[in-house]
Amino acid sequence: MRISPLASAILYFGLGGLFTYIAIQSVEDTVFNFFTILLAFFATVDFVLAIRLLGLHFRIKKAKEKDKK
Image 1 (spheres, rainbow, N blue to C red):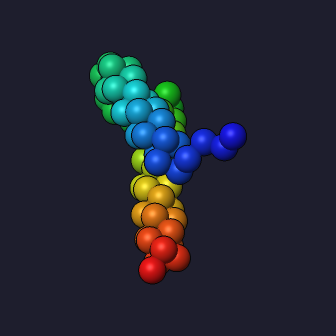
Image 2 (image 1 turned 45 degrees about the vertical axis):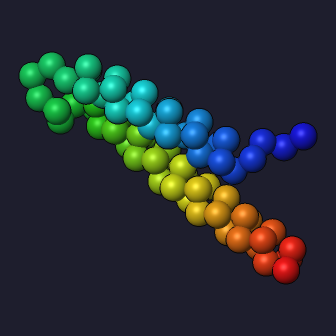
């Protein structure tokens, strides 16, 4: 059984939040260190994937409703 786009989106939002939290905690003197920027990049990728998966979920839902009519 495959995982739904909505469940994947929730997972990616959680990972994005986790990476954001870790990036905030890793800031010492300045934000511009490699580890913080890398974590922020991963968080951004996760949030973008989550938004795209939410869009896919709603498109599938709309197509299923259209097929019922």
